Length: 103
Image 1 (tube, rainbow, N blue to C red):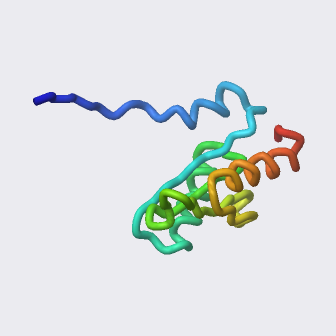
Image 2: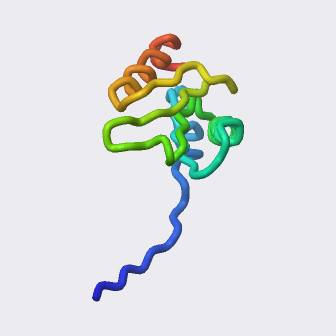
């Protein structure tokens, strides 16, 4: 038997903007068993508390081997609903480029 001791560590996301305010920060939020409105609310809270420029949020039930579904949230609004890992990455880059890659 192996016993593994774990302890909670400090979140690093709030330190990123504090150390470099010009960083374009994308947050990620995964929740389980919540309605879409709650997921959006929590994603917006993550953005506000940590200075995220946008957040990719998804629900655990919408993750599968071949498909990932989620919402790209920016300025409190859903700006895209990409399906699949490649489309998610492309949507994030596309939104970043709208701002020239920075704020």
